[in-house]
Amino acid sequence: IVSKRGRYSEKYTQDNLREAVEKIRSNEMSYGAASQIYNIPKTNLHNKLKKPKNLPKGSTTVLSKEQESELADWILLHADFGDPRTKQDIILAAAEIAQLDSSTSGFKNGIPTSGWIRGFMTRHPLCRYKTPQSISKASAINTRDDFAGLWRNIYKYFEKTDQLDLLNRPELWWNADETCFEKDKVPRKVVARRGAKRVSRREMGPPKANTTVTYAFSAAGDYVEPLITLKDSVSTEAEIAFTLGALGANYGLNQTDSGWTKESFYYFVTIHLQNQWELKNIPKPRILVIDGYRAPKVSFG
Image (cartoon, rainbow, N blue to C red; front, top):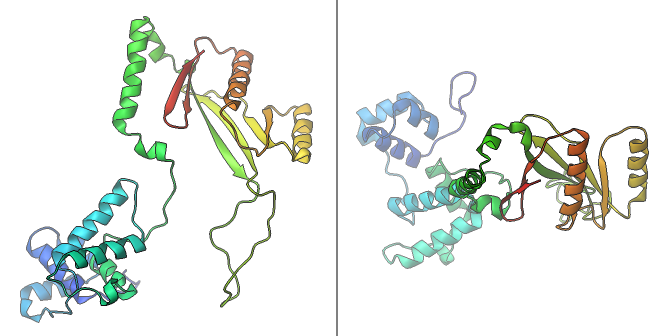
């Protein structure tokens, strides 16, 4: 990080300096790239390359440089495939590497310390702590080939039924999805008194209750009125919703025991969409693509 005065506000380690010099010497990085990634001024890098004897040896690590590089590659590979590793995963993996290699001195008590993990993260600047975003397993395992196969099958079906012209009719192609609003969403972090060992939070609404909004858009940019699913025991919300509907608000309503949509509810969604399509005079056949529980699904109607 560079301050406004042009000085580097964070100190770099000797391991970082040594690795940056090796990257430059082997033409893997330019001076500018190494300076930015390792947080080292360019002048320092120039000086160390001109006077390599000035490079300090630094302290030795339990794992060899090659072992740490393989561990870093393993971490980044898992992250790229949507299965990122935690701090504990890295500690256990490092401990296992040290135990299997008799040439290493091993970690004290067999487990790397917090100091070691901090040093490892410093020595491998491409690895950084991040807040993950959860996605469904179905979304994670569906590959590009899976989706390509889906559309190939659709094309073959249209070709077989002599309906290839439908591929050029965006007003017939629709996509439906849903958004869930939790009645009592629990925040990940809160501010409390310093030193408090336990922080309780009073429930602000029915636990595990939701309001779900289902919506659909066409490839031509058209849309239908949304479908709102309410928790059946929350009568006040239903009364408010029906009152707004009587005043002219356009949407469909449904109630379940929790406010979540269910598999049997898709029949109701189909009825709602069919009614909306009829009101908008959408021509047939209508092609609906939905985000299924395991994979995308396509229906014709």
